[in-house]
Amino acid sequence: MRIVVIGNSGSGKSTLAKRLGLAQLDLDTIAWAPGVTPPERLPIAESASQLAGFTNAHDAWVIEGCYADLAELALPHATRLVFVEPGVDACIANARARPWESHKYPSRAAQDANLAMLIGWIRAYVTRRDACSLAAHRALFERFPDDKVELTSRETIAAFQPDGASASARSR
Image (cartoon, rainbow, N blue to C red; front, side):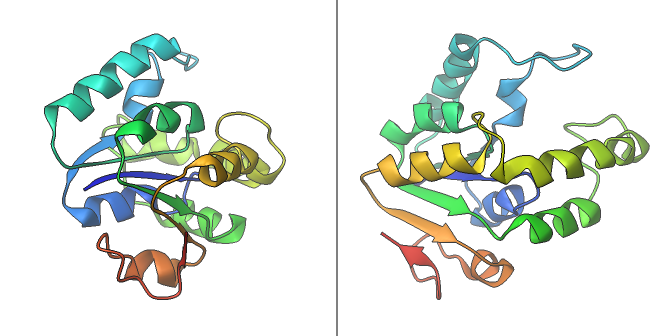
């Protein structure tokens, strides 16, 4: 299995990816220049090189994130695309309840200090027109010619099985 998971911040991508038990790549870790304040995106070629290193190092994997431009680079190697879209309100609730992400923030306090900005980012998902927007994710999902599934509720996300046995998900 080689699965790409896309969706809004707070949609449940990371939780789903962890549950699959495969080698996991969080696209946040290759999208941003480390230690740069304010955060700055890495050149796409540098992110692509890191992505290729990950996919070449693992036979089975899950790659998750909100970056359609990076996810698209993984799709030629993927066996399935999962679009996690439970709606903005669910994403905000998940962001408020998320545990400390030690790989992203030096402390829980630093993560909490970023929460208002994150909620604003989540709310703008439907109106933004960047690589992390609903429009970009929808277009990527529609273009992908192979096995794909859209999960539109917390229940379908929780029930998702990588073997395709998920109930109430839209598969194509």
